Amino acid sequence: MISHELSKWKKNDNQFAPTKFFSNVTSLLRRFFFAVLSVGPMPRHIAFILDGNRRYGKKWKLKEGESHNIGFLTLVRILRYCCEMGVEYVTLYAFSIDNFNRKPNEVQYVMNLIRENTQALVRDLDTVNRLGVRVNFIGRLDLLDGPLREAARTVMKATAGNTRIVLWVCTAYTSTEEIVHGVQGAVEDEWARLRMEGTKREISLEDLEGKMYFERNPDPDILIRTSGETRLSNFVLWQTSFCLLYAPRCLWPDLSLRHLVWAVLLYQRSYAYLEKAKKYKLEVNGQGRSLTPECMAAFTAASSYIQF
Image (cartoon, rainbow, N blue to C red; front, side, top):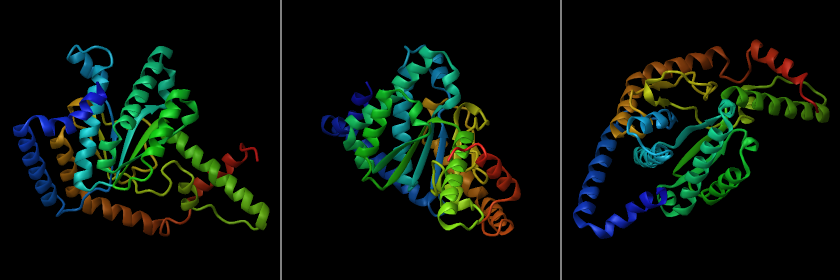
């Protein structure tokens, strides 16, 4: 079903001239609108919590899995809009580590859905490459089953050369685990350097962030969570200190262009305040190059638990 729907973008062009004409006009108008919108500050990075697929299925009495397939098509459509707006990074919260506490059959069902959607991207690389999407899976990938890990590696390798937009897929991820991962990596690097050079130095924010899953890529400017929920659910907590949170009431499959545009308008309205807050933080933290005493204490505590 997914591959069939994705292929419609190519098939419809040859089958229905009126449909092609209407699509071209709509695309032209949309690009013109985005050009006007880009007169103001535009987000570089938008993050999404895909909430409401199952509720959408119950609402419309769909068969099991159909709502997630519709949600995947919504994702492809939103990615296209983001590309046209010039967004450079899109992050998705696909599966939390906490979700492994669900019933085994439910966990496996979701794993299979993610794998099928990932394989659909591989099968339709023409569309993905036309959009210029580079796909990166991040999180505890070792916790995923073998077929999903292989599908993730395949799509990451196949899209590695694309540079227009980066799609981060957070799978088996929580923000607290990412922070622990960063702390462990930074402490291990500093311990190795200390053994070689014999001189101590402070671990900087750059050291820590360089070992986190997002490395030093830009933080999200906008975080959109559908279904009207305002909880972050342990998602990109480190990166969203100065991020606009937008929580439309629609379910994820119903997310549309108007919701995305409204989020950008809200971001533009809040841009001056957010930038002022970022600047103040940099000044207080000495340009963000050193950790606070609280963070240094956390590093010290963490290092005692790491086996070198």
